[in-house]
Every structure is written in structure tokens, then in C-alpha cells.
Length: 52
Length: 492
Image 1: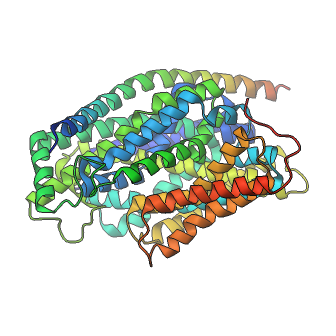
Image 2 (image 1 turned 180 degrees about the vertical axis):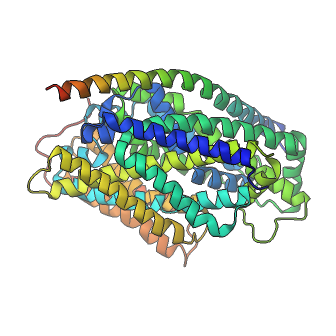
Image 3 (image 1 turned 135 degrees about the vertical axis):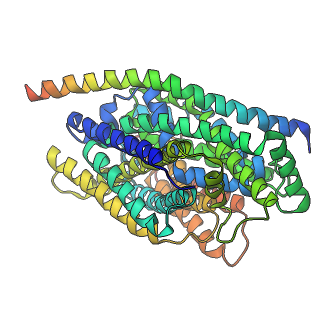
């Protein structure tokens, strides 16, 4: 077996595990804040519609 | 391994949280724009979570693990190709930039602006046909994972999946894309934890060097028919298939309506492009990590007397996980897999319902519906798709490899709609005649290959590439042999 090919897949597997772990924290934080902003914007638009 | 009370509590907490979050978002839905594209308020990180969660379903985990079991790590090369295609589309803005700038709600809507109302309707029909058939096997494969991984009685499969679909239906039909985005976010987090934990436990259980040695031994003895590391090897995919996959994945990234619905919900084209480039590497793990579980299952069962009776290459991985995962952890993993299933089901149901409403029903109405009527109709369509899924999805028996089924059904519309999009956005001479010819030829191709494929052995890359070639010939010949369009509208 070509050791370069084996190393290629090994690096990709460990990079993927680290990337998935990192994204849980990074996206968890960033997207959480974006959802808060999104609901505030939509909530304001809804209130405006209600009051005409 | 069966579920312990701790596992059940973890699963119940997760399901309750999802349902609550989904229903909470209902209050922000004012009309179809909010329902279908979240009022175009989606920012980049929510987009990443939603795109990743929708495109990584339990069905994905099943077929990528099957590829790992049958082809070793080389089976994950499709994920590497997919990541490259998504990154390239995001980096260049190819198709997705002008598509988002067009301000449409679905791809076929663009075709009315560019070609004609008939082309829009015909494209909508193919999009829905390909999409619904593609989604048809999601529930069964998801149910098989749960039954094999948890040791629940097989007779429960239909009831579990019906209950799960009912739960997804409640928040998707009421909150639309807004509920889908928020539940996708939660599901992305739960899925991420489950996939990382499972991958680490699998490596610890089988041992990295033992996994390597086991794959090489399986290849040496002929248990593994494909080279476990080299995807270009004649026994694996080969160069032809990989080149074809690159074209196919570029078409997917620019044409697959569930992915494009995130582009159309983005604030602007720049947000959509960043969402693509930043999500691209996620697609490597989407194939490689479940592929690792599948490869580990192969090594484990080969060492322990072969695949037990009643198991297939598709169900080997969940059965192996039931051996590897301890109590408590299996609850987290099952919650993660439920998250994968739910995020995909909700995104797909909403997408196809939006296309049916926007491109098949609305153009046929003589008088436009009231905003309340539009919302009610879209919600009823989500319900109708759920009913279809239950009957088709749970009672249809898969004839062969899951990945092949998904590729063929997806191709029913990918080749034709991709050709229409590229020509419509970048070729001023393209007209409605060429578009109609491309639609018919591009969709007829895969259907003919589907029928002839049982009689004659046709390589999937030949079948797939021919569909794209037929659609392109239809577009070019049809456009050049008929009058030029009155108002060409190339991409800016």
C-alpha cells in the first residue's frame, strides 16, 4: 500500500473530526447570536404590521 | 445493546427542545415570503448550520457508511470532490450569485423571467418529480439505522418513523423556513457532537493500526473488492467516474433545490457565497467519518467470522455501532441521528412544497390567492408530501445500492435544470424552445438508462454524462433553430 495514500486519508479523518468539533462551538456561538438578531428584526416587522 | 432509561431521557429532552423551538418560530410568519425563504433574513453562520444539517441526513450516513464498507476510505473520495465543487462555486459565485440577485423564491421562477411560463411549469414538474423520488427512501433507511443501532424490534420501524415524521411535520407546516432554520441550528449542534463522539469511539475500539492492517488484509484476501485507499484504481471508482462526479457535484451545488433554497434565503449574494466556501470542508467529513465507521465495521466483522446473517453492507454499520457504543453514549448518538433525519426531512418537505406552490399551482390560478390562502395552501402541501413519504418511503423496497438510487433520481432533473440555469444566466441566445428541448432530453436520459440499465450494463458515469450532453444538445440545437429571444438577460 502506498504510504502517502494512507497518510492522506489519516490526515483527512483527523482534520474532519477536529473541524466538526470546532464548528459545534464556533457555529453554536455565532449562529446563536444571528438567530437572536433575526428574530428581533422579524419581531419588529411583525409589530409594525400589527400596528399598521 | 438496547436503550437504557438514561438514553431515553437524552432522546426525549432533545425531541422536546426541537419541537418547542420549531413551534416558537411560528409567531414570526407573516406570509409566504417568511414561510418559504425566512423573509431573506438568514445570515452566514445560520446558513452554514442549516445547509450542513439539511445535506447531512441519516440517509447520508447510511449510504456513506455503505461506501466505506464496500470501498474502504477510497469511498469517501466523492466527499473530497463534493467539497472542491462547493468551494469552487462559492469562490466564483458561479450560478448562485446571479440566481440570488434575481430575487426569486425557486429556480423554476427564474425560468419564467428568462424563458416562458410553460418552461417554468415544466421545470417545476421535473424538480418535484426528481426531488420527491429522491426523498422517497429517506425514512426507510433512517428507520433501519435506528432499529439496528438500538436493538429495537424491527416491527417498530414504521411506527417510529411515522412518529418522527409527524413531529417534523408539526413545526415545518406551522413555521416554515423560520422553524427549519432554528431547528436545523439545534440539530447541527447535536449532530456534530454525535459524529465526533462516535468517530473517536470507533477509532479507540478498533485501533488505528489494526484498522489499517484489517483493510489491507481484506483487500489481499478479496473480502474487499475495491482498493481501500486509491479511488483512481481500476477496482475502485477510476478516473472517469471521479471526473464525472466533479461535474455532477457542481450541478448539485448550483441546482439542487434544497441547497439553493438556502442561497435564496440569504441576505445577499455575498452571504450565499461565503456560506458555500465555509461549508465546503464539512462535506469531506460528511462522507469520510461515516465511511470510517463502515470501514471499521468491515474489519470487525471480517475478524469475527463474517457478516452475521440478516445483515447487509447497508445495515452492517449501525449493527457495529450497537457493539461499540456504551449506554448513555448511544442516547447521544441516537439523538444525533434523529437530528440528522429531522433536519433533512424538514428542509426537503418545505422545499418541494414551495416549488409545487410557487411553480405548479400558482401559474395555473386565474385569480391570485389571498396571503392567508397562500400560506394555508403551502402548509397543506407540506402535509401532502409527508403523507406521500409515509406510503412511498416505508413500503418501497430499495432495489440496489442506495447511492446509485439517489444519483439516478437526482439526475432526473439535475442535468436538464443545470443546463437551463447556465444557459439562461450566461448565454443570451438561449430561448424557450431550447429550454423545453433541454428539459425533455435531460430528463428522458436518466429514465431510459434506468430501464435499459437492467438489460445492458451501463456505467453510471456514462449514463450521467450522457444526460448532461443530451440536455446541452437540446438547449443549443433548440435555441439556434428557433428565433432569438426578444429580450436577452445575461448575468451581470
